[in-house]
Image 1: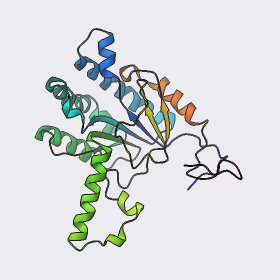
Image 2: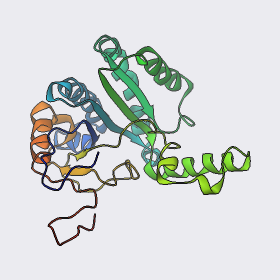
Image 3: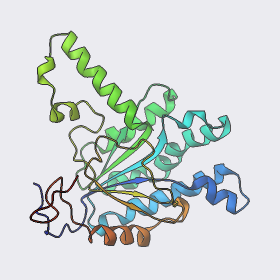
Image 4: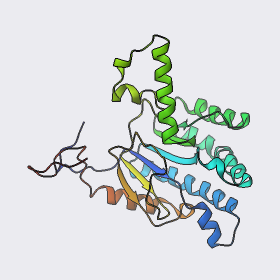
Length: 249
């Protein structure tokens, strides 16, 4: 339900985070970038543990983009190992605490053992409904939109759909994020202020908070600060700013 222009928006039920700054965190300490990524896994654990305490129901994090394949081979290998590190240490707790895990992005190109691990995490937590954790891995917003268009086109070619069936709601059902609400709030730490191809379709009316903290240092206090900033906003969804001035969006 759309909120009125002056209605307080409270706590975002769905928060998305671009986990950025691992490499710079390591560089500032004279460490290899790989150790920055490992420290980023610890930040993810802290943030996932803190989110339900802050009344967040869903968290989507950006772990590896379709563009990250262009990084040095050693760094790509370390990034590929991060889900394994995370799930080996935390999957049992996630399962026990009622967290449902969902992987977004293309499985093609990932190693068979990583595909198997992601599938296992999804299967073991499929019945959980306390909290949703979506991990965008080998994901790109543009790639996901292209994949969705390709799936719809195939359904048209196979006679399962007609071009006239296409609406915004129909298209959303072909995305990898189908069946779950869009993020209320998108957070990007590290001081950068861009989306970097993350949830392009889904964040059309999300609020954005940019924070000057590198991801490995992130934790509950930073997340709470982002929520406090969100609570000051007025979400209009294209509605009126005042009685006689329309917002552009």
